[in-house]
Length: 93
Image: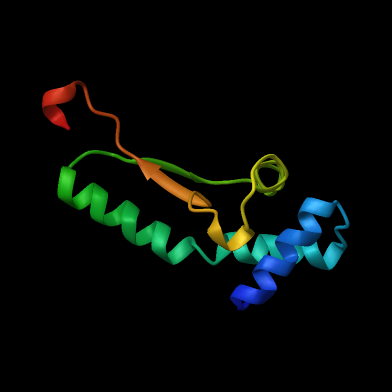
């Protein structure tokens, strides 16, 4: 598991465009580190709402683009993984 400092240094290399194969593997490892939280959120959402949530993990390319577009550190990105539930109307929210 990467430390917060290692994650942010990786993010700096991503922003600079100096990515090695190891950096790409580390970025993928970082993305996958959200799997357990994603699975729990997905499961709880399904159980609580009785709806079928959808979800995804942000791709490496999307992470790279976000880091280059915004003034943000890699460890600050909050939407590496996410799920949502689509409802029919405001009363269902």
